[in-house]
Image 1 (cartoon, chains in turn purple, red):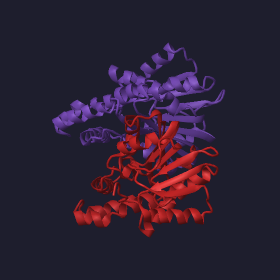
Image 2 (tube, each protein chain N blue to C red; image 1 turned 90 degrees about the vertical axis):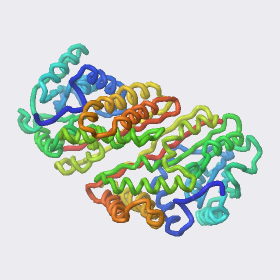
Image 3 (cartoon, rainbow over the protein chains, first blue to last red; image 1 turned 180 degrees about the vertical axis):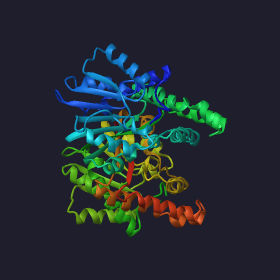
Image 4 (tube, chains in turn yellow, orange; image 1 turned 120 degrees about the vertical axis):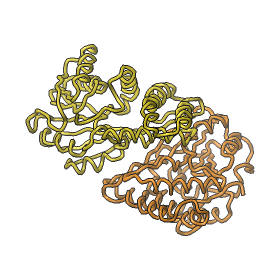
Length: 268
Length: 268
């Protein structure tokens, strides 16, 4: 397997979490991605289709080809798209590093929450580049778990997040990749590169995000690796429990939570 | 002394640093603060006048009263304002906790890089509130040193920043106050509270910020506490040096630096 979806995907609970996250963050991450009528768009690494639905709805007249290495994820993505009544997406199984397309096939390539799972993200970007037509655009969106900070602050909560980063590292990925998009994409040979941070800032005046992001997305994601953390002895179990409790404390009325996604655009 | 300017101010080098920072960040922090003709504005804690100049220029027809507890800072602020040819600012020495103004004197209160130095920031906000007219606005801007993250990441650099946070804590302040503005201001009794994060995102495509912020502001600020860190033995000296070097590495072509300020607005 070329890349791992260690943290995301596969289980029913995790799939639900991804869908919640997608809905809450749609505007923040997708508002400035609109592809014109007839343009050929490659979504490289569509997973279970959480972003595919948004992409396709925001660019209803573009022709989207969504690729993933996992047949199981593709099947789920296909069902999601059919259920949503979307007709401008074609699915195809494939490995980002060896995609079955001719050079200069696409006007645009879209890559979201994928590079974090690749052992060689720069190489992945290099392999995608010739698939773009001259002047075609690349759009990349990634998170960065090291960007999380919160109130009340808590050293155990920070260590629990570090465990997640460590596990993604063990799986060949990089949970701190958001901050690295500029050098990665520049080194892969793209031009007109622009990176914009998209911070999710959550205080008590934003209850939808408290629930949808801090609780159901972020804290749930950290909590989701509890067994693996215990199995590997990455953290003292009392400290782990205190850390998880502290993360949920940030969802109480006096709490604040910050997390930053990064969105990059560039041209071939 | 009610509050300490441990990190900022006083020395010539530090004053220069503050001026650089003010210029680079003016747009990001001040763009949405404009006070109308004839409005009475209190700048609570003006320091050496770095923000006063910007405030006064952006609201040339407002009547600004700038207060600070330090006579030395006020003198410098006064010189700066005179040198800039600004005439709508009156200076007055005073303690934020016991200001010599009648209730309901001001239409607006502006507080920038001040709460971080107060042992009782919520009490400070409570004392300021009655000085506002009914419906008058409060604007607060603060940084948060725990919001800094960067590429290449480095544990020694992170520890060096933690030393700065610890020293500000010892001085009675709080270098992580930015993330806490919402609960602090809400608990001080203000209404219509809105907090907006202002991230400074810096990659190689933004050389002015690499120089003006990462190098001359942030790294210089951390480096500025070297003697105190050594004196107190807060960090192994080899690790400290490595950490400072790593901070400057983030200013090289492949580097990235992120820091978040928080801006809050509310009404009495």
